[in-house]
Image 1 (tube, rainbow, N blue to C red):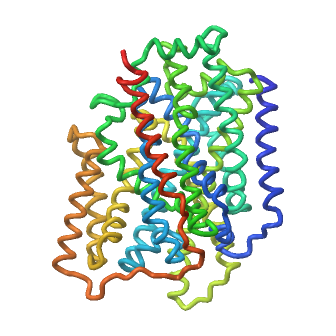
Image 2 (tube, one colour):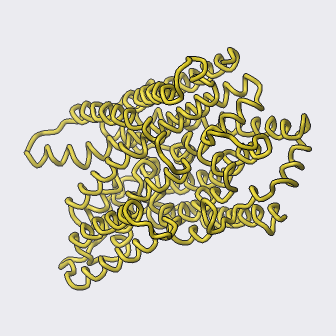
Image 3 (cartoon, rainbow, N blue to C red):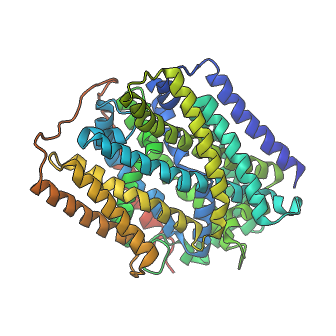
Length: 533
């Protein structure tokens, strides 16, 4: 381990924590709203950076670089195409949440269907976070840090043992951020890390290209653009990790779910001071997603020109950083990776606690006619976060036994929970008389159908196409039930208006530019662009 890299890592990590503490030390958390929603006070910059960096974990660096190295840039579709979903959510969904003064996305399900549906979906979210989202964030962060510092070699222990140790280090620090600082501290960390991440990405690109070009970065660019160009293609075929056709089937559904229903993401937008700040923040996050090829994919492209056959492809990103960066930059990027893991783990933990306390614990106590104080809610939320983080830390190292490409494994796991929930949310948004029983049947059918097609039966159809089929079938079942057994009283949206709901007046042309840039990226990285052979 290089001493300079280690010192840089410690200094940058300490600096991020110190800035977060200085900015939040006067922000005393006295209510559940302060812990979970930062008292609905976030500016558009805070919303945008928080949305982006909650979405960006070490999994993005590890998974994207690996996928590009073993396949091509088709993995880019996940991040770049999400801009369309984010624009739709900003325009049509966030106003509904803010108008109803909702703290969690399942609150909509209670208003639209009934409290039983809300509790069921909240429980599914919690299961998803504890056995899927939190462990994946911890595992990917551990893989990246071990690759950067080669800790398994230094400690003379097995690769698996080093992953266990690093998972627990990340988990403990991330838990402290969430438990002690709440959403406010997480948002401040995101803002600081944003500056560091883009700086680190530009420096890594420079040194990586310089390495490929034998000391000349311009020559490095020429080398990348003139050889092994098949890796520069973002238009995936049926044989690639992400076929281009999936963008228009399951991927768009997953992205709409993620940016419009996933509690850990939407919670950042719900904490905004008004609708305008929320919509501006989402646009800022869109700009970040469009820079994804520079941040997450270029290291994989550089690796293609550096290594012929890596035995452990999950360490592609770490190997590139270690081999091309001076020690200071290696330590700097390691600190960014560590911070990215923390700022994905902490919001997920905070959101899990939000769902448990507000949607399960508090209603249960009120049903028993128990008086629930704000102090009691804060205590119980912190205890739950401790339990959830410990469970995730035990599960995370087991991901090492996954047989899939890491990024594909992550997306498949997410889809098991996302599409069933998204489907009943979608039907709830577009109809007014579909009854609660339809939501419960639809949820069960879609979840069971996905498990059957992915675990027990090999359909030969890409899992993203399966998602669209299940979405259509589930929606049809729910609509049929609604036609046969409609609600007597049609659903009517609430209007509590706890924040200013005036929309951002410049959103249409800004969103139009974002969508245009999204399309241009696919054209540039295609066989009619720079991937032309």
